[in-house]
Image 1 (cartoon, one colour):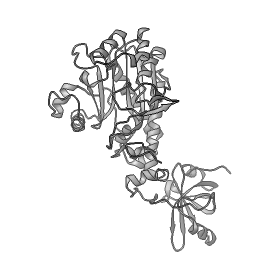
Image 2 (tube, one colour):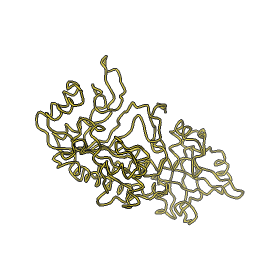
Image 3 (cartoon, rainbow, N blue to C red):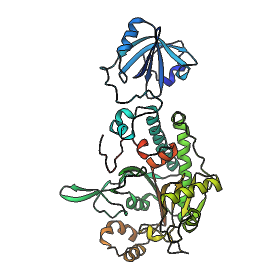
Image 4 (cartoon, one colour):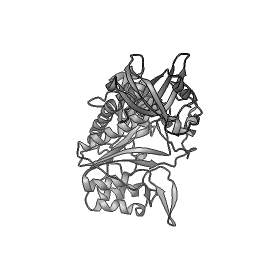
Length: 428
């Protein structure tokens, strides 16, 4: 007999089926017992009236894995409108040791550190697993949106010989007796692959050895990277980003509808044209000093409130960041050279995406490095490609965990990360 998931039971009313999962909860009443079984799809309710089966159910511990063969009966008050009667219950393993918190409660009452210490079981809670389903659907939408536009998925090294990819600190490791580093970003590689495929993307881990201890930073996170060639300027990149976001949210609505309902969240609409303000204007809106070189979190929150109030948008582009705050490969604004053809995308008042147009001429790279007093040698392998012809290009990177946290309303990115790695945590 084929196993039936909890969400499939309503199609088998009147039939005897086999289902299986974890003991989620037992409710032992005087004349009847209810066994709630959890599987990957949801919950099913098993009604137990036989004394021998009841005794068996009483002996079960929560999280024990069981198989149930029973008859499907319609019941509007039960999960999914059906319940299982006349069951035969068979444990598929030894009695489980119950976790240090109740998974059947609507919300986990344990502190976040306790949940993270016991992540393999905490993630079984419907709210925690729902956030991961939203994450998976977001990645699926990211890939689908770009595949439909003839982008090519690439896979770049995560161990590199140089620590020069970005301004972030790096993790050093021993590579057969030579120093090597965990990659901070696929930035250089995805630019080089524009010279091969013109339009590329990657989904992969990146590593930042920054001693951050905040609710928005991780030392390892998943980066959704895009790079495309033959752009006029950064606005072409922004248009692609807008369509990618719409694809990601459409995928969440379609592929993770149950998870969205479990979390009780409303998915934002992506405007046909996301509102944009220049960095200098953003400072005024946020009430920041005119000589401020970057936006602080408080400024981002103020801008998010302004975008919602003035444009009804959860998204806001801030363009034209000062060149001094952008990497050396950023293309300057031809009209205002102190500012860049770069942008950040704020999502509900928090930076989510950084992107922009890149330099594409070899001579411009040499000049940019010289202007910053940096040597050319560490970048030699990267710069060589620009001697052999590269088109005007640009791209962006989305932090997956931060996107899901903002989408679900999580207060901490660790709530939507299966096994977070940060300043303090290397296990489980």
